[in-house]
Length: 320
Image (cartoon, rainbow, N blue to C red; front, side):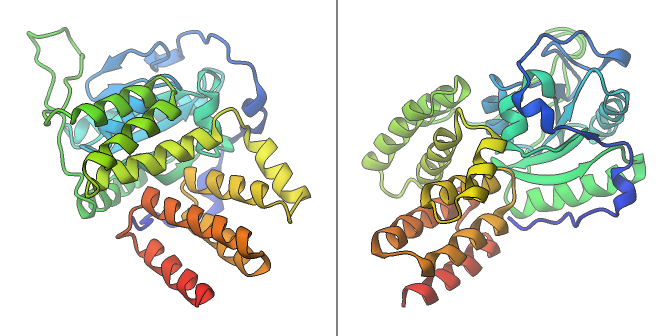
C-alpha cells in the first residue's frame, strides 16, 4: 500500500520521549494509567488494549477494519493524554476505526517490531500491514485529518468493515463487539491461533499445508511470508540487528536481518533499497538468497503495491 502520511514538521515531535532504552528493559507490571487509560487489557467502546501476546488478534482484525495502534506508557503523561484524545476521536468514527493502546513496558516485542523510538508513537494497521502515522502529541484537528487519510488508504486496500456498536443490554457497558465476518478456513484459523501464541513455525506449517491444498490461495502465500518474517525476527533486538549490520556490512545474514526489521516497521523502501543495492556485490549464491528474500518480502507488502512494482523492475534489470 502507499504511505499516505508524509513526515510531520519537527514541531510535531514536541514532547516525544526517547524509547531506545525500553528495547532491553525487563517486562514489568504497570499500574493503571492515570485518566482511565487502558493498562490491563480492558476495552471501552471501540477501544481494546493490546500487548505482545494479543497482538495477533488486532493484526487479524486489521484485515476487516483499520486499527490505530498507540504505544503509550504510564510514566508518560503526554502519552496518556494522547490515548484519551485518540479514544474520543476513534469513538466518533462509530466503528470505522478501532483503537488498540499498547503499554510499551509490557510489549517489548511490539516496540522492537515497530522500531518505535519515542513515546507516544501511533501506527495504523491496514490489512495486516503497518502504516506509520505520527509520534508525540498532536492536536485533534491534525489527528482527524490523519484518520481521514487512513480511511482512504484502507478503502483502496479493500478494508471497509465496521465494528458494530456495543449492545447496551448485551455483554456489559463498553464491551466491544467483534465485526461480523466469515469464519476463517480451518488451516488459516490454525495459523492465526499459532501467530497469536507466538508459534510462527506452526503458523508457517499451516500456511504451507493450505498452499499445498490450493496453490491459488493468495492469502495463504502472503500469510506464510508474514509468518516467516516474524519467525526470523523472534528473539532478536532492534539494537542487536542494527549494530551487527553496521559493523559487518559484508555479512549477508546481517543485511537480510536488518531488511526484515525495516519492513516489519513499515520502512518498505529502505528494506528494498538495502537488498537491491547489495545484490550486485554478491556471488551467485548470495544473489539467489537476496532474490528469494525479496520475493518473499514482496508477498508481505502485497504484490499490487506500487513500491513492490518498482522494486520488481529494479530486480529484473539486475538479473538480466
